[in-house]
Each structure stands twice: as C-alpha cells, then as structure tokens.
Amino acid sequence: MTEPTTFNETDWSDLTGNDKKTLRILSHVALNFEPLAKSTGVGQKSMDSLIEKGLAVEGEPSMHGRTFKLTDKGWLAVEWLHGRKTRVYPS
Image 1 (cartoon, rainbow, N blue to C red):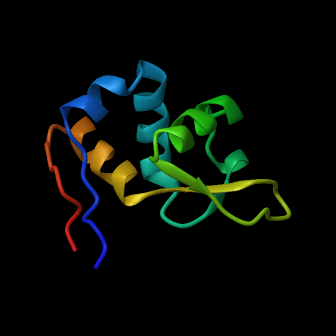
Image 2: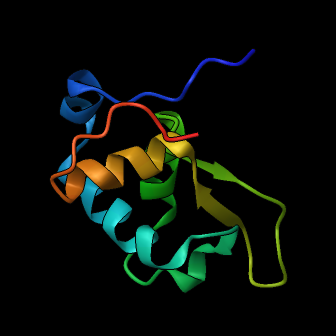
C-alpha cells in the first residue's frame, strides 16, 4: 500500500515566490508531460527547483525539448495557491 501524497505548512513555507509563479503557470499548461518551451516565463532553473521539492517530474524528451508535469504534491501546492489548503491528494 502506498502512502497518500501530502502537503503542509512546512512545504508551503519552503516555496519561494518564483516557485509559486512557476506553479501558477504550469497549472494552466502541464496537465500531461509538456515541453518547457510551452510554459512561457518558466526556465530550467525554476523547473529544477520544483523537481527538487517533489512538485514536478521530468518526462521523456520530445522534439521540442525536455518535458515536465506537476506531481500530485505539485497539484496540492496549486490548491494552496488558490486558498484551498487541501493536505492530502484525493484518491
């Protein structure tokens, strides 16, 4: 049995302003693995920060470059951005 994905106050306080901006942008375009080029205003350094925090993962490269998508924890962080402090990813 796998542990549920969680997000809490500590995770929230670890997010930088740039992380929050990147999450907002990705929440509109990264439903599946999408090339970074599709996310205007998001750079590789921003994606590396989200990956390091477990909020995004990298997929297989496409003809347009490296691809990324938000993890379940990343989607919880997006919920917090919208003022909904969901702590466990709904199964």
